[in-house]
Image (tube, rainbow, N blue to C red; front, top):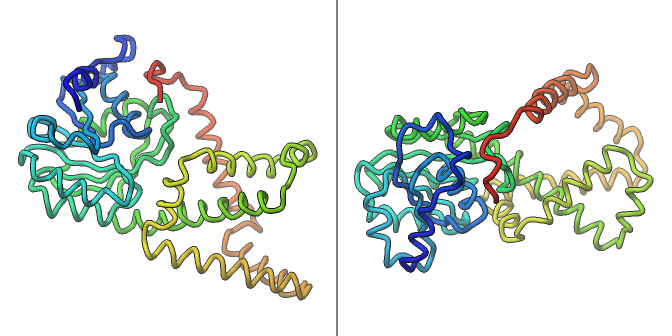
Length: 311
């Protein structure tokens, strides 16, 4: 990164965005800070008075300057490059530097950080996209690694803005993300491809749609508004995800076969088994989801912090 860009990367956001909860200025480097999520974290961290530098793929000639003196190095790069970047960056880090990644796969990245860096290590996974204005009402999964106290100020920043922290092991995180992310992405990806192949008039369908259909189309459209590389990387990230998606596809095929046979009783049995598992018959799961949604909606009426930050 040329000197003028280095200078710009240290500029602060307007004073009105600064949080009173921030204790002191810290030197931070975000690897991948020009990406959408990296940019979000750069703006949020700058807004509370930190000096934030960015390091991109063409900037490794400045790595010694950008990484050696940093108090926090945040890795925000595509899944496929995360391990490589961790290994490369670790060569420049002081034992006191806190190293953190925000990719959606945590086991391998956390292991790599622990193996290649002797200092503080933590894995984070923001459970939101880069379009938010602040951490208000957002979830961040925290996977402790080593010397967690070094990250407490960062976790406090997220909590003080109204964010929710969920702590788990990297292994549990990755197991949950198979369902939370991979199969959901594939399911909506498949629906989008089906609608495209069928040349469905989406606008016309929405004019006579149910609320649930409109909600589903909105979710599918949000998926396809993303960078395709991001979506496909999430689907292909691990062998466990590939296996789960293959199992989901087999379930589709098995149920479709029952439909083609017009096997009403078999379809009803499948429905009832899922109904029991999901607690839907007594509205247990529905009530839980409604309670969760109510809490989320209540958050939406709260004032947002750092509203000047742009994605």
